[in-house]
Length: 158
Image 1: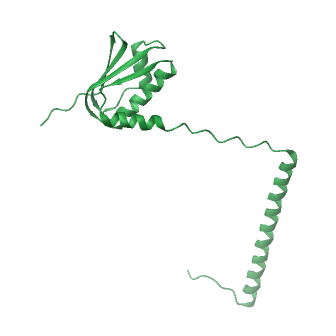
Image 2 (image 1 turned 30 degrees about the horizontal axis):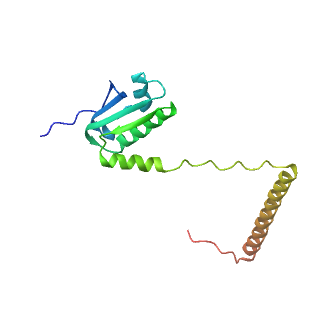
Image 3 (image 1 turned 90 degrees about the vertical axis):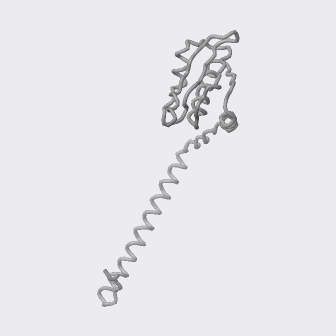
């Protein structure tokens, strides 16, 4: 039996080029992954500069790793820094490229404000529709009662 992979590990180091985050272990969803914002706060990293992510010791991974890295990159960029990725598996690089290629969806424009005349027209139309529906119901009810009284009513079999 092969020994299980170690859990996901994030270890901060200081290198000549700045902060280095070393990733190792099993980065699969069922093992759980750290919070990107908490990982950044743990290092005490200040805004600006470059964070190098060294990921050459990852034993196993799935989309949890790309999700963590996407969130981590977003947190660093919010604080005015940039991330340099090294040693990533090929699939992770492609997933990150796809995630960053999708533009943010713009919210739909707000509907225009209703003028008093438009509000009145909407209410009148709704009232007229309700009157037509009631009259249609009363007409069908009258026809049904007439058939019932003449003995020609059609009913469904139970």
